[in-house]
Image (tube, rainbow, N blue to C red; front, side, top):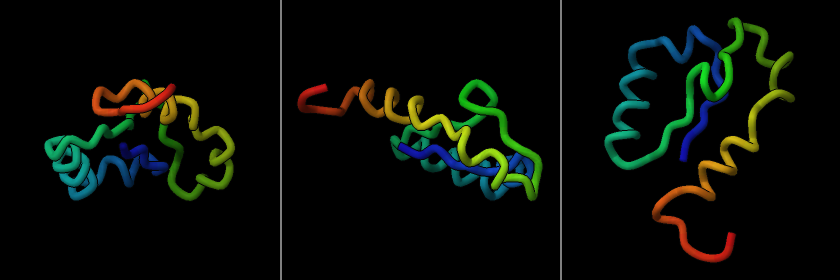
Length: 71
């Protein structure tokens, strides 16, 4: 499971896009995009860190098909 906290410029960078595709190809669930949370403007991350959607990451982890054990 990967859920990067990045601004829109970082997420749009070709090397980052490639890395996220590779992670996904290797079976890592990559949670990113406006449907997960809207990426902030470069240089403003400190204003948005408190809005990071930990609940979405947790729910995705709990719903992972390879997860075992109690909920």
